Length: 447
Image 1 (cartoon, rainbow, N blue to C red):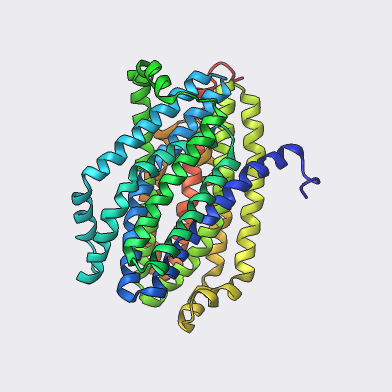
Image 2: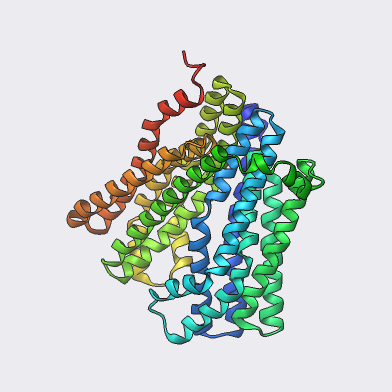
């Protein structure tokens, strides 16, 4: 099917395709949760599920650095053919994920209170959020350890295994939700119970696959043997530094999208809804562009570990061309066919008209976003986290400033223009740091 493409293009696409499928499978779980509770509950139950899952999405997304940081360090160790360092990084990240997971369990009352104090929902809905939270929080160690293992798969270039783990997680979760909610009439407690069971099953499956790939036979014994290396001060500090920077970067991105939504809400409910509809197209496009970014994480880390500047530039060029073409096709696709998809997402005539009137802006955003995705992948693979953090903060500040200026004159169109400006600035900011990355990671190979 891909025979007309150059060999390296086919390799990059084959590495990215399982990631794209894994990303695309995630929303199915939310749909299954909604469908299951919708068959047996009422609006209060649906509201409880929506808010409860949002809390966990926010908490777990904040700890996404466990995946990204692990990817970069393992890719570099793999490129250097240092098997012991691969194991050390993996065990260090797993232990960190376990520690954070246990800490979240211990702090569950505080986290729940902090999360619900800002909710404007009814007391009944908030009570259901509490029921869901107190069960689901026990899956935190499994989820966070799994982040580290998924980072290991990507760092090693084993993206098919990542897909199998994601499909198992979602498949088991959907099946258990139907069983517990529809079959046993457990309501929101059934949703939470099915989710944590699925999380632990997926964790054990991921560990089985990765331990086979790395020929790990006695993990406890190996951890004891590598204990002093795992806790080596400079390596632990480097891990915390990278993870801390990535965490700040992630919250800056969250803040950017939250600002976009909040500013849209000030123009009225119809514009808020229309912007939300268009963001679904942006999110769908991100599944594809994230796939290439993940591959770039692995390829950049691997070539840095090999100290092969020529191969680094070659892989960056090829993967960016593919990502750019994909972004163009996606932007054009949603712009051209968006008028047919929008009615599927909203039956409100006014919302449809507003969304159709702003389709071009969503298409342009998608087109320009691939640069930020690709460079994110490069900097994650290179573990140059400070630059990522700074670029995210700079672009957020400029986005907020631009939105104040442009929305005064152009309303929601000005908001979209500032949003497009935001993603362009993210790419440019990272691009300005790129020469420094080359100097730091390939100091002896620069001509």
